[in-house]
Length: 453
Ligand code: DLL
Image 1 (cartoon, rainbow, N blue to C red):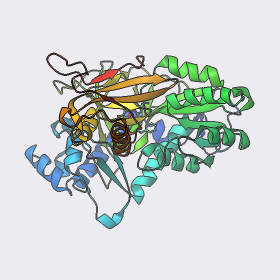
Image 2 (cartoon, rainbow, N blue to C red):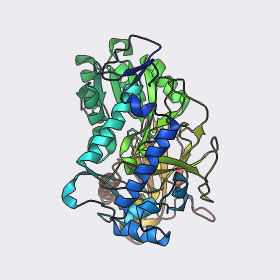
Image 3 (tube, rainbow, N blue to C red):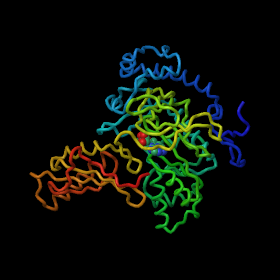
Image 4 (cartoon, protein in one colour):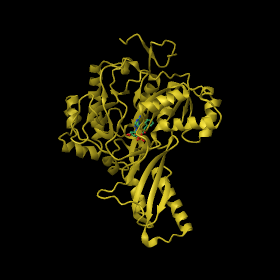
């Protein structure tokens, strides 16, 4: 029996302040024992899907596992191999595709460490399962079919746009699929269609607020009541600032393309941590150095195993994201455990206005350019609410003429090449040979001047 305070998302009107809105109460409030039984069954299923790929056949055989039935309990998970971003990169483009190509209906890619992207394929069923997870997240925040949803995240290979889009449609919201950028249009749409819920990166919402002032619009002329914020690190202070500036409630959303995208973990009305949907993912927190599991409350690397995705099943994927499990129960009564706000990463990936960039991608491109010398510096700054990437590079001495036109053309060419490779428009600074500081010992190539989040 479900507790009486739960409302089905489809019918929730937000009238009773004590009630907890939920999209799929049967799963969201499932007893732990039943949830773990479901996880075990899905883990076996996932391993049998994974065994369809040469990559996992080899990896699992090395771990002594050739049949999914060999998994007797969830504890056996620790015998399974880890999967890393590099594994995904090496499997590019279809080494991890576990279904017939014609069964896959969409793919998403995200940046890999040295430019080679990681690819996740989805079957129709995978997309449906993802949509359901996102619908759960949306309804858990109290958003309803009656809301007008302006989706300000990028549509395309990035998963933020399409991920939230289909979830919001499923809930029955009126969706404005505006995508990212074009702030004056965002403001016009917010006003004309009286959007009540938005989805954006936290830095973009702060930028939007500044732009509102420039357009002579005050937040209380809008009809906003909620924001879903994610895709980049942000502090509790930033959330509060967004809430105060707009007079709304903002909910933290965590996800990554390798685990579909958004819809992995989300805050509910109570904002006591991000519920991670454990019927869809097995969560582990490990010490990134020893790879040993950590106890509840200890901060370590998030490792996840997909439980529902057939086209690209992933076992023990090392996300490189750092967090810990929140102990105790959430007042909402959901049985799915909660992740604390993310604390950073255990690798050098940079998140620039929500876009993931590895310094090695920038280095690769610079080093491929004959006019560029070997010394360079990647600097990150805040310009207003947004991040700014400055790439400072020396010119190769033999090709340095000092001719302003040649330098302008090189600056332009490098800026464009980087923009298309990493999807962030950099400011390029060209320096005379030998003029950038040379570090003693291990070169420090990244200078992050953004305030700590
Ligand atoms: O950023 C998916 C997403 C879209 C999540 C929209 C939330 C909202 P990727 O581009 O693959 O996917 O980037 C994933 O972004 O490993 C984290 O390092 C970081 N990240 C995502 N959400 C949060 C968050 C999407 N709420 C990477 N807080 C992840 C901190 C986050 N970091």
